[in-house]
Length: 268
Image (tube, rainbow, N blue to C red; front, top):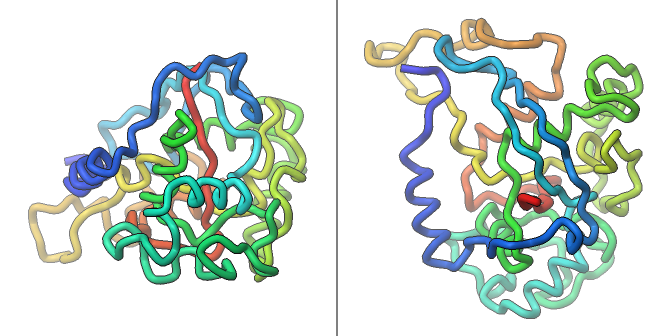
């Protein structure tokens, strides 16, 4: 058994998403991708992996939003899709805190500036928004591929400024009112705010999680527990990547978090 497993819960998420019509429309052309940047083909190197899993995963070229989705953009979405308004969304698809910082169903208010990234949205809601734009959420491999790019070179971990930006954000508490999206320093390919604004949903957030609760269960792999879980780690100095992996493993699709937003992706 591999340490990283595809959970049965993904099947239920996929069925629920299909029932809600959350499948992205194909066919977005690169020349029509306003507000997106092309991330060239590359590789994703999982920070944690099982003994039988590859150290490098090929990632095809893809388009990625320059910045996270804003409150104003999500407001336009809920105006056009009433079932995703705060008072309408069902408890299966979002926890009670969904958009709770907005002043109302269709009113942002002072705690949710129009140009700040939208947060307190569930995976279901983020995926619905992306599908409505003819896009989708990026995969973990795509998001991490983009986030690994430095400000001036492909390998960000070799850049002191890159490492400082990632570590500096983790060391600071998120403000109650978030700053505007899109003002962060762009990476080599033009994507902004990947390191230092909000956490971000990915489409397959729950496909790389350890399973099992009991150390007495002989059917579980020992590598899953405690310090041994880091034995397959690729880069022990890449603390931000460990934090992102930990964050994703703590989520359920209905969860809403004060500093968890999203951006969209699409194949060119």
